[in-house]
Image (tube, rainbow, N blue to C red):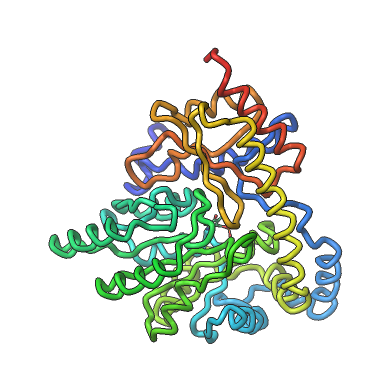
Length: 406
Ligand SMILES: Cc1ncc(COP(=O)(O)O)c(C=O)c1O
């Protein structure tokens, strides 16, 4: 058969996939230090506990573990989740929950449910490249809203909303990562959270809140989620897409979406047509994690580990890149990423090719824009590399930026 492209759907013709996914493949090169992925540190994996949970699960109900299971999710995990969310002052019932095979599946289901080709959709500038990849499948029209040091530029957002309304083309939703955002590390302030909810309620715009790093705060005080604040006001304008990838482990691929029953029902219908159920085994591992691990102590261990790495990265950047070298970077209060900004003429997509020759990798900022990419930025991850690797990686980055050739 020839010319496959004519056989692909219109949605797939120009679809190039998830660029960070390709970069993740590189972490298998033993000589390369990758600051590209958003991977948790293996030091946080609860291997012994997992052995014990597996043993318990297999002896309790071996045949059920090997079987198909409910598409909406295991009742045991739903119950554990309801209690877990109560700690975060969120009150939901099973009708508000859909277990997903990771946060990425939640984003995919959201895109399929709400977006028709050409639909306007609001995203932060920059935003999580994986969300762009998920939504891109529906060929929406991305409208970017700049990030300020305390989150979304709400004036710009309002301008989009007013314009959309006057043209009869209102955005289908706003996608926002409010806590230690991927890729920028920026957190949406409390006052902006409240203003954002008021603005979106006024224009009846749905908010998709994606917050995988929420419990990884190293400084400052916890802020209520948009979901919680909206619920307190009696609203139903926020859908939460969540994952256990960053705090339990990404290998299990378990996440969940919470929202109004009508939305959950429809997302379940879509899931019926693709993966059916999330494996019972991985859901049971998550239930055991939620029920049997001292979560506060575990989160605290992760915070100590990651805040040390963040501090080290900040020191290294300050040491290798004094102001005259023209780079600046964010100082996040949590999460896994630092966002570096270079001079006007820096193209980090090209720089990455050179950096790979220096055996160091990062995410070039251009992949984090729905439209009109900005090429001056790079995202650096600090959670995965060991401290000596972080040290060597920043040195290599500095050598690469210094070197004149290519
Ligand atoms: C903001 C954000 N949302 C969702 C995800 C998806 O995580 P997963 O598919 O591993 O659950 C990630 C992972 O990097 C992320 O950073």
